Length: 236
Image (cartoon, rainbow, N blue to C red):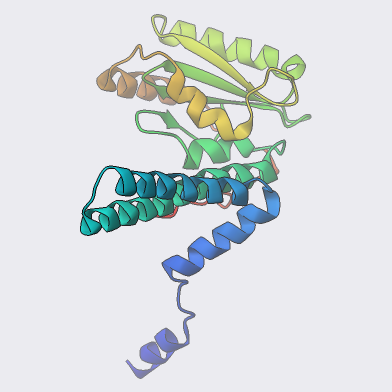
């Protein structure tokens, strides 16, 4: 018991919420020069609105103060939201272009209703290009990682497999790579969310299970370790 107590006492304490937010802010500011001006703007806008409403819509001092306080609280909240968004973007900018980056996004940033895995469904062992799959309300989405000129064949093969297995399900393709019309890494989750819904929650599970049962295990491309590289969570 004494040894356990001693070990617990020697364990470094986890950083508090404010320390975590400060670390996220420093990281974001280092890689994103626009983060601080946007945060300041996000804070000032509600404050200005609160002051204006307090001065012109009420003659009561207490009500004016409450409007101003509401504006300050709204400004703090908006600044935190901006920080979270810019921090996520800054984190992904550090891994963009590396093998396995799309897997990191699918593992940590998929929004509600979407299922994906950090494991690719197809990999080119020579170029380390890969194709990942996500299933959600918008159907099945194939996300290629690498130049389209090298990933097009893998995408077509995976599309044919899906059409044979679940022929009535819509298949959408997204490219993450150096091409001009490719989707930036930090916008992958948002792009999936914008796809028009075609499946119900029950159908999502059925389609995902059907495709997963046919999947052959493939190694994650060497590069980014999706289990370790994650965008920082938005501070609350």
